[in-house]
Length: 71
Image 1 (spheres, rainbow, N blue to C red):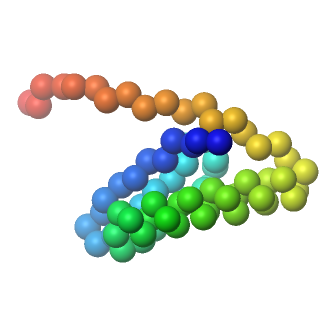
Image 2 (image 1 turned 90 degrees about the vertical axis):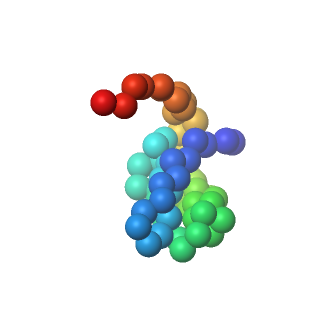
């Protein structure tokens, strides 16, 4: 499966979250670290869903870049 992940750079760290998996998020000191951690978080999240007898949601989020004129 391939889930869309939102990666954000903060003032002192990086964050990542998965729109299709409520509550699945990670934070790290670098972009590389947060990508590794969110991959692990997704795997753990999916294992938890399966163990709880819940269905695994299919990836459905999409990304679109929108150009705007700055005011």
